[in-house]
Amino acid sequence: MNAKFHLALPCIEIEETKFFYVDIIGASLGRNTQKWLDVNLFGNQLTFTQAGEFTFDFKNYKLDDYILPSFHFGVIVPVDFWGKLYTRLFQMDLEVTTEATFMQDKKGEHLSFFVQDPNGYMLEFKSFKVGDDIFTT
Image 1 (tube, one colour):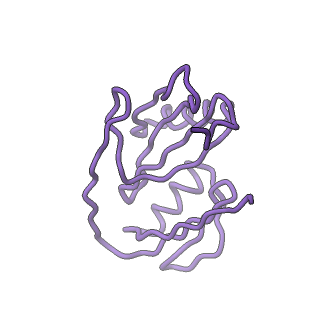
Image 2: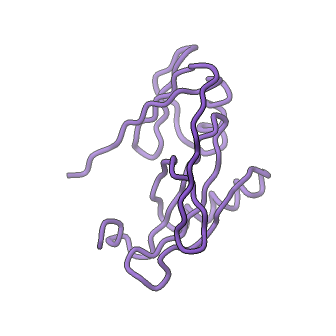
């Protein structure tokens, strides 16, 4: 089955969130009002609802020699897109973190980087060396 995901999240400010996902990341805008919006993130639906201030305790975990955020979500993209997006975001002087190759020379080897959205969510972009390795154990 090839299913799409839907993720609903609170946000601090709708216009800043819309600008980040549409103008910076390149996602397309779906249905929206002054208090919520849908974003088409590579065929998957993110819904942001303006909720004002909220907090999360960002606990981390260690993978190889990297400390990564436990609370994050992301998208798996082709390597050429991954490189172009990484370069573009880095040149925009955004805080792009943890650019790395994980599981090097093993099943599941992939490039990864994180960028923080205006609400404090960590968004990860991955590109697998072998596409079929995404769920391989």
